[in-house]
Length: 445
Ligand SMILES: Cc1ncc(COP(=O)(O)O)c(C=O)c1O
Image 1 (cartoon, protein in one colour):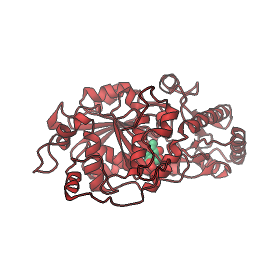
Image 2 (tube, helix red, strand yellow):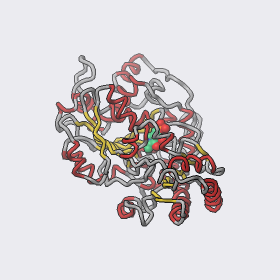
Image 3 (cartoon, helix red, strand yellow):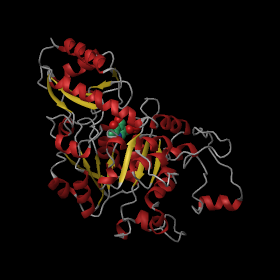
Image 4 (cartoon, helix red, strand yellow):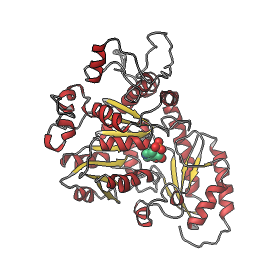
């Protein structure tokens, strides 16, 4: 467990540096070393058997299941999110896949917001449906009657992004959590865009939180990764027949399921995730990437504060620009989500600013390739500013109808505002607007 100071609880800035870390017991190394080893030697045959039987949860066996470098990142992010424990995986995509496959099996049903990353929409609509898991998408995240109506007897999870990619929509987490809980299912929240510095979904009623650590948590754009944090708030024992993966033994010769055995330590969901779903599907993080993640985490709040300042400047500039039809940034006074953002995101709405350029798809694509300081690429959350045209890239695999339902219009442009001087960013945007100014207005944005 994280050695917090009993004299005084840590603030966020302290925890992002210290939570989960301790000097290396064998060398005294103060920074967390990279434990570049696939396996860990057993002290005895008895210890080996105990590790495989999950009687020993302290030591490591094999880096596909756990690793000391990765464990520090897990403990730190669980602490920052206010969770009970966390499991790191190899990508944000793996985080959402495994978080949900720990709850869903063939024949089950998922309710999901449509205001989500295109890769998550694809995962649910295509891959999950191939596995026999169906999904109902909610287009208007504020239409709570439609969330309620979407629940079916076989629904086993509700999923949404706290701040949606790319439109920056802000979910009423407490209300959607209430709907999920009334139906006896957990709420899983992808908190990638907000980060725990801006919003902690578990404190608003979510049960499980996921991240693409590729983005703001790392911040340097060098390592793909993901993590699942469990709040240990959902009671899988309340309706035992509904959750056979937790309430029945995984193997016929075992006496108990994960719920009976590990819920007293608040480890049932996370340990099942690690020792069945991660073990069997296998997307483990590399300890080197966990080390890179730790370097980023140490400065998370400082970076996010500057991201927010710069993003607000860019949103104001865009709002006043004649070639812009609409700006999507939740704390902007004209945003549909401004009131909720003021309540849930008092430190700001993050770095993602999306807007609709007049001139439709052609203008959007030309604008993205005309920027010089903003890198034209598929990522967010880097210290560098980034740009993409979602309709022709991240969301291109979705049908035009699904794109429209998720608010992905042809002229939509997504910016991930970095940490450069805001004046330089605004000058770059001005050059790109000039480049598309004379394009014929073939489509309206
Ligand atoms: C909100 C969100 N969730 C999940 C992912 C997937 O993460 P990764 O690219 O690390 O697999 C992304 C990637 O853009 C994302 O934006």
